[in-house]
Length: 154
Image 1 (cartoon, one colour):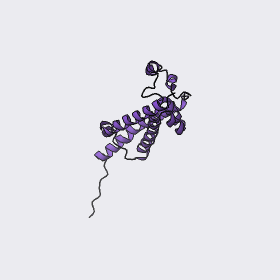
Image 2: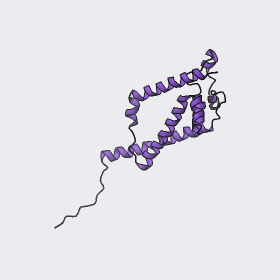
Image 3: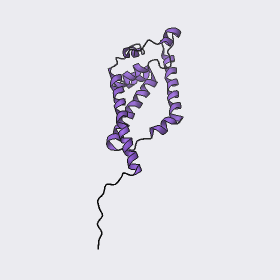
Image 4: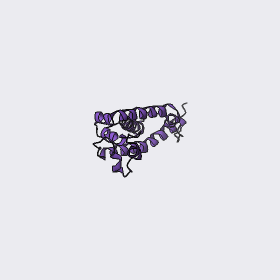
């Protein structure tokens, strides 16, 4: 005698529930990254290598006006705009940090699209953001970019 299994609604396992939450959370992050890339691609890069942020309604840099040297983020918006348009060499020459930042946003976008729609096992962002290493890498890239900008400042 065989016993038939009754079909019933089963609750998702914790791992399935966690995966579903991660997929749902990936959608707004992917949208935010895409919006940032679209915004950056609409900004006209400043010929001087800095000052593109003025198109966003931001104030002129007080640091540059006061000390006549670039601030640590000088040229980031211009470089990000160039990188978003695909001009990676010009973007790197303008401000390496802005280039790396934009490439990071683009990579993050595709990772989130893969997580949301293909079910990729994306990284645990809360664990990454709470660790020290990514912040030290970002700070190092910022210092490298600022050093580059100081060297190439005219």
